[in-house]
Amino acid sequence: MQQWLAGPDRMDIPAEFKVLNPRFTFQQRYLVECRSSISGEIARGRELHIWLNVADHAGSWQAGSTYIRQDASPALTKHNEIQFVGAFYALPGQYTVAIVIYDGKSHQYDVRHMPVTVKPIENDPLAGRVETASPAVEFLDDPPPNGTSFQKISDYNKDVSDSLWPFAHVVDTFPLNSMRPLQIDVVLNLSDAGDVVEIPPSILPRLRRSPDFDPRLMAPPPREVKMQQRQKEYIGALLATAKVLAAIHPANGCVRVNAIDVMNMEVAIRRMSADGVEWEKVRNYRTTSKLAEVSLTALKNRKEQPNFVREFLSGLQAPIEKCGTGAGAPLHAVIFVSQSYVFPSGSKKENFKSSDPGFQFFYYRLDVATKNIYDDLGSYLKSNGAKTYDLYGPRDLRDAIARTLSDISHSSTAK
Image (tube, rainbow, N blue to C red; front, side, top):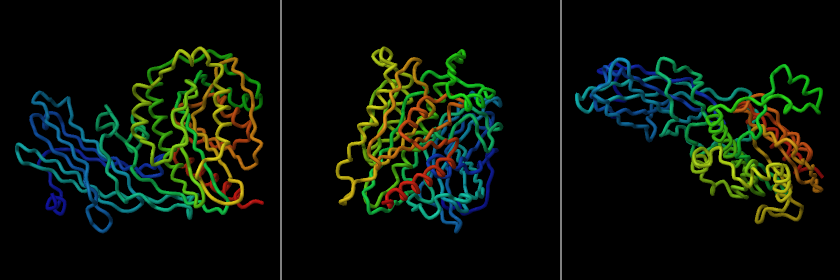
């Protein structure tokens, strides 16, 4: 392998290769997707071994690789293709990607070297607030399923959301200094969008001018099979966002992760440290057996959803044990992350307001799977003075974190 990587390109087996442009993800890391394709007519009957390797700017091949074995069926024809999909997370820099294809039967092999540049974030709002903890290159296994043919793959792959890829094992950290104890609760809404009502674009300006407008007067859109796929994308982006927020490191304090299911009115995670959350396990459970599952009790009492949210958030006013030291009262921030959510018609939305001036709310509205959806939850959280940030993409998350850290830092020094 080292000889192949150090040598020139070679093409014993006719194949096609692509390295897609790096994409910035909700994990605040760049994803580099690499692909290779062999016509079924050429691949049939072969014992294919395929590796993805990466070298840094100095030509040093990074530890690890992505590897698959594919025993191609003898029945393949020119109408089929064998496709390899691999990827890695990378820090900004210059890299060389190498894809090696070896046929264990004929001992023929291909080697293709391809340069790739991962550019740093332009006008980074978190410049000076980030400590790089992640490795330069992290290889990924188990890519998301994708049926798109090689010829239709472009640098922006609409068929497979980046949030469906495996999570990075390590993300960057965000130090936060304060003499005052800082306690941060990250709260995730794991449920789908509730009583979904899509708002036509022509209605949006009128809605902003008329807060009393009720979109439920319009006929709801039909439930599509795509809703489950959208929920999977949402859960992936939600947990990626949570993992990044959990990497905020107060010098005097802590961050805890909470997760609730508003539709089921259930608490899935309560004040768990980031190290204790099994991110992939949570994603797998919420996108398989728990996907679109609603209990009979929750259906019967569904109009109590706003009260469930209020009671849960009110309970977070209790201090986090063993979280920061100092004589002063702790500054407590709650970062609520959710897609737009619609409460059932007729729900009792009793407002709540914390009497503690050190208790702050931030609402991160994650708009990756539900577009132009009316949001009851956002207006409900505003009753407690929550600052709202709309997250349409990973860069929006970075901007929101920068503003949140600034707000918390300012509050921690205010008299």
